[in-house]
Length: 252
Image 1 (cartoon, rainbow, N blue to C red):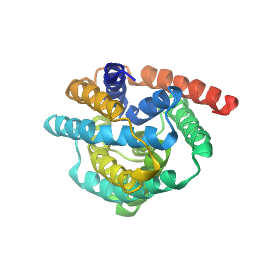
Image 2 (image 1 turned 120 degrees about the vertical axis):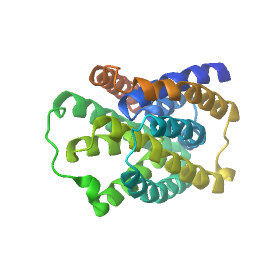
Image 3 (image 1 turned 135 degrees about the horizontal axis):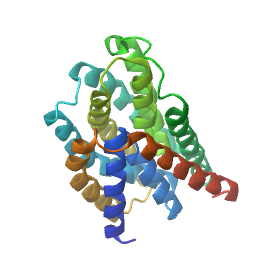
């Protein structure tokens, strides 16, 4: 595999992630599975790459004042715990069934992304959930577990939930979710590292994704309020549904 191709893929995935507050893991994992990587390798490679991309993205959003510090902490800590457990779970299941599992989970995330942008964009906020620690801890843990076990999902779970249940500004939701993913990426990587004997990571994939994502992260943070988020989200959702739907039908 040529790392340059993965650098380009990382740039595209980070651009999508910066615009939507989600998408790096989903886009990258779907690509790696399509190219033949195992589910555990795909998720491990993506999260290792995300350590660099989420750090730079978080710093960029911090400078752009797109972060709510209190919400960041309440999401990141339980998110890290969930991610570690999710990585351990994915590393322990039979590899012959893990691709179907991760493709099914990615398919669900694609439908969630599509549904959110087709039908729920006008839903009013339910309450100031940013002041509800219990809700944020539950949301963070759930998002972290799904993200690590599915190769992506932190953004698609956490971002829409906050968009529809809080009164936070959209740019702060995207910035906070993106920055908190740094802790999720570190925790998931730690979980995969403990089980490194069960998986075989191609580090050229990690380097390519990390380089492309890192170069695009500062640009994406500045474009967060300028790109057509709804249209882009719909296209990404459709692509994820089609690719993973085909993989499930083919039994790969």
